[in-house]
Image (tube, rainbow, N blue to C red; front, side):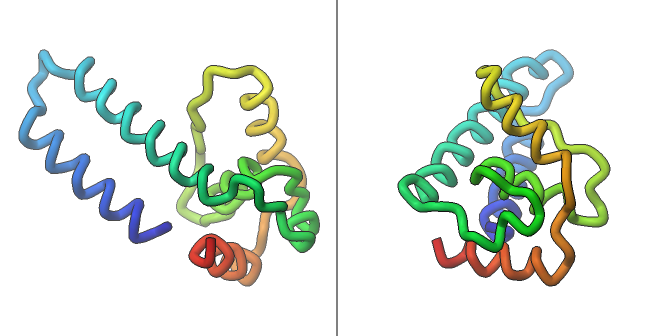
Length: 118
C-alpha cells in the first residue's frame, strides 16, 4: 500500500507540474478527488467479503474503514486526517476511528503485513 501511495503521489505531482496553472485549480482539485475516489474503491474491493481480524479489536476497530484510518492516524508524522465521504453513516464510522486506542508501531507493522497480503 505504501508503494501504491508513493506511485500515485509521484503521478499526481507530474500531473500538477504539467497542468498546474493559477487558473486551473478547480480542474486539478477535481482530478485529485477522482484519483482518491478510485484508489479508495480499489482498496475496498480488496477487503470486500473479508472479516476484520480479531486482533483489530485490541485497538478499538469495528470496520475496515476504521482499520485503515487508525493505521494512518497512528503514524507519528500525521497530525490531521481528512477522509472524504458524502454519506453521513460513512462520516460517522470515520469519526469513530479517532476514538479509542491507536495501534502501536508493532501493531502497525502487523497491519501493514495484513494489508500486503490482501
